[in-house]
Length: 382
Ligand SMILES: NC(=O)c1ccc[n+]([C@@H]2O[C@H](COP(=O)([O-])OP(=O)(O)OC[C@H]3O[C@@H](n4cnc5c(N)ncnc54)[C@H](O)[C@@H]3O)[C@@H](O)[C@H]2O)c1
Ligand SMILES: [Zn+2]
Ligand SMILES: [Zn+2]
Image 1 (cartoon, rainbow, N blue to C red):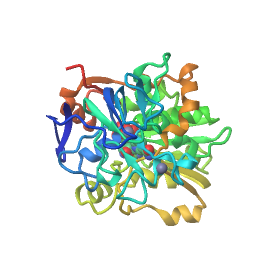
Image 2 (cartoon, helix red, strand yellow):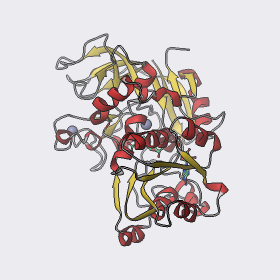
Image 3 (cartoon, helix red, strand yellow):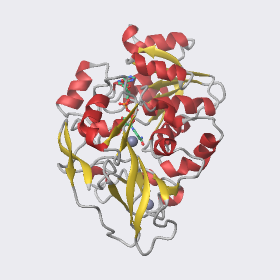
């Protein structure tokens, strides 16, 4: 089969690989019909995540058709059209029993933190991902769901990570009726967090980024106010002035390990690898939220320390909540929102490419060229 393969930082290409086989009675093999490139993939592409091995296939957001099932699989049959959460989870450990699928204890032998994730380096279990023609789906009775007849496939792909992650970002913010919510990052995750903040009762939603074309989407897609942080002297002072000098009730960090805005933080994180990610947006969130406010962190960081303003957070009495999304926990409610037309997730898709064009796709998304927000990859289109 054809698959995207990592050759080192900023170097990927399409290669021939063996079609994955059933390795365990609970496995399914899925023929990928649509996948996506995520901001998390950029951290891998940029060499930011430890133990990203040459030869790995990325891709953790996908839909497909069940090609084969192991003898123990009960909920899926060959030919089913499925959407698959980015989390690989066993369904029965301490964490899965509490629907904390992102922290499954059985699917990632290498870490005590995150569970297994498709195509996300050996820090997340070393599973090959879905930017390929086929993918092996472990614990096939746990993660995948059949795509309902009424659901568009492109909406389904966005339900495998970006929408639920943004939604969980808003949920972890503990938003109360009328709250002022500031979202840092106007990528897919930030856009869905902003949109979700309204669903949870926010009274005002403000999105911060430095890319005007994305802020435009934050206005049209998420009905948010926007601030380009390069146009203001000091984003913290600016947000304080907008919020009676108290600060926002809730700040959501959706920029992640490569947050811009400080030369030194970027150099320490991306160039020197001396911290697990640039905490610029996270520190802004800590500074911009009011005392005893909530900070929700959905942006991805590597498993090392980062220079986070923890003393300020402590002295302000902040509640900081973080996690990888537990995608499947959110599906019942989010399926309803999509079905009822409350949200059309695929409205954020700006590019559709074939698997053969994936190197260009990564470059475009990484360099934010051609007003790229979200790229879908069609393996069969070539
Ligand atoms: N927690 C999870 O389960 C989960 C799931 C998916 C993605 N993520 C993470 O979420 C983050 C965002 O993903 P995405 O797909 O939206 O990526 P993206 O790269 O498209 O978006 C990030 C945005 O943040 C902006 N930004 C950079 N520095 C900023 C700053 N200082 N302040 C405000 N905005 C800033 C960028 O311009 C960009 O628009 C990534 O770190 C990704 O790894 C986490
Ligand atoms: Zn993702
Ligand atoms: Zn588990």
